[in-house]
Amino acid sequence: MKTRIAELDGAAREWDRAVWLEKRRWFQRRYRRRKGELIKNMAAHLMKTLIEHGVTAVYIGYPRSINQDKANERNSSWPCWKVMIEIARCAENFGIAVYAIEESDTSKYCAYHGCEVERRPRGLVHYPHGHTLHSDINAALNILEKVGGKLPVRLKVLSFTPTPSEVLPAKKRNREKPIAPRFKAG
Image 1 (cartoon, one colour):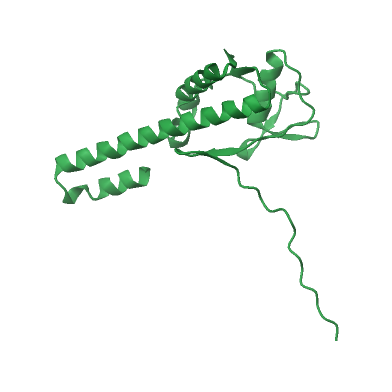
Image 2 (spheres, helix red, strand yellow):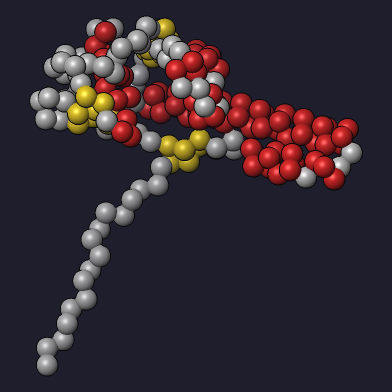
C-alpha cells in the first residue's frame, strides 16, 4: 500500500491536483482501515488461542518511548496503544482479565538468574550462564515473574501471521536433510 502511494506521488505531475489529492486520501483511508482490520484479527486470534490454552489473565505492558527512541516506519506502523486497547477489548469479550503492568527494563536482566545480559543483533540476548533467548521472550518472562507467576522450564513459542482477512499459521520449515545421491560402483 505504501508503494502504491509512492507511485501515485511520482505520477502526480501528470494529473490535476484535486484528482491526485482525492486519490491519495483514498489510498491513505484504505491503508488505515486495513491496518485496523489487521489489528482486530490479530487480537481475536490471540484471545481464541489463549482460551484454548486455559489462560484466565493477561498482563499488558506499554513499551514507553518506543517511538521516541528510534522512530521509523517499522515501529510506528503498529500503534502500540491501539493494539493494547484492541487486545483489552477482545479479552473482555472473551471473559479474560486484563492488567496493565510497568515493563521498563524487563529485557535487561535474565529472567532465570537475575544477572545483566548482553544484547546482540536480531533481538537475541546472550547470558553469562551460557544460554540464549530472544529479548522479547525474556521481557515477557520478567513480567510474568514481576506479577508473581511461575517461570516455565521449557517454552513453546506460537507464531502466526495476521492479515486483514484472516490469521495464517506460520510456515513450517522443512528441516529434513536432502538425500545425497549415491554413486554407482564400476
